[in-house]
Length: 171
Image (tube, rainbow, N blue to C red; front, side, top):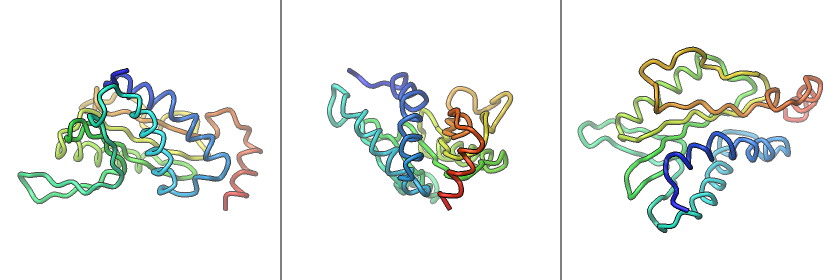
């Protein structure tokens, strides 16, 4: 199977969240570094199915510099296509992701996308509380390239009492 943007988008928005949530419920994800490890691991396994070996590679916390300026960016996860940045993924772990935090991360992804000339940017956050996406309304200039992927216990159908027990154990 040839992995393109469509297949990668489907994996990141539909297949990956339940897998990451399973690790979170088992207390295997306790911070953003653990989240980065599991996202990178599942992405590597998915990209292994690509027909053309070596065409796609994944890096975590790679320092990238714009050739025209001295600006450095540090995306959490980056998918490279033939040695060039293709998809930028920012990760967040919090009990509840606030709108202000999500907006700041979206701006950060926007800057990284222009600096690295990536095709898509994803904000993937894992948390305990929240039913909907944090960034509501029209996407505006972030239109077809920015995607928000919430992985939330409350959204997964867990009861409020079960989430409170989970949170007490999590601390």
